[in-house]
Image 1 (cartoon, helix red, strand yellow):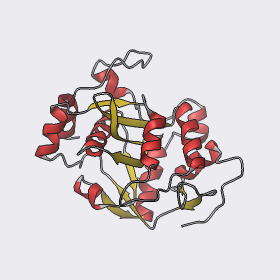
Image 2 (cartoon, one colour; image 1 turned 90 degrees about the vertical axis):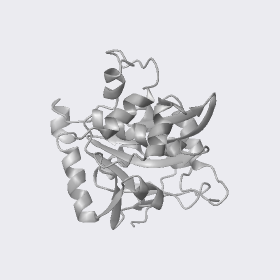
Image 3 (cartoon, helix red, strand yellow; image 1 turned 30 degrees about the vertical axis):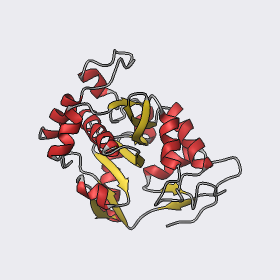
Length: 248
C-alpha cells in the first residue's frame, strides 16, 4: 500500500489511467476524506472469465429477467449508490475526488456501469474501468436480493463477448469467491495485466494497432445496438445465461 495525497484540484484522469496500467488504484479512508492513498495489494482477486460460477438459482433469476439490466445509463447514480453508507458498512472508500474522476473517465469512455432496475427503481449494479483488454471492477452494490450477482453475471458475459482477458476484483471476499473469483500473487497479477494491456497503450495504440476489448460487442451481437453503438434496449437474460455456460 503506497500512500499519496490527493491534489487540491482532484485526481487527474490520466494519472489514474496510468496507475491502473501498472496495477495501482486509489482509495480514500472515508466518504468525507479530503485525500486518497494509492493501493497495490500483495494478493489480488481476479475472476477468470471462463470460470464464473452460475448457480441454478442465479441462472433462474437471470433467465426470468427478474431485473431489467442496463449499461451506462445511470453511471453517476450507481457510483453514488456504491458510495452510500449502510447498516454494517458505515464508511466507504469512495470520496468526492474519486467520484469526480470516475465521472470524467466515464465521459471519456473508459469507465462503465451495469445497472439493475426493479420497475423504475435502481436496486443494484456495479461500475469499473476498461483499459485494453482488462476491466477493473471498482465497486458493486445490491439493494435487492441477487442484484449485484446479476450485474456481475451480465458484466462477465459482456467481457467474454468483447474479447477481454482480465477481470480485476481488487480484494477477495466470500461473495466474490462464491462466484468464481480467486486470489493470486502480485507477480502473477502483473503478468496477467501486462498481457491484457499489450498493444493497447503507448506507441502501438497511437499507431492504430491497439488491442482493446469491445465493451459494446454484446449489444451488437444481441441486436441491441447499431453500428454507431446506439443501444436500443437491455440484453435478454436467456442470452446472458447461454453465454455464461458456453466454454471458451
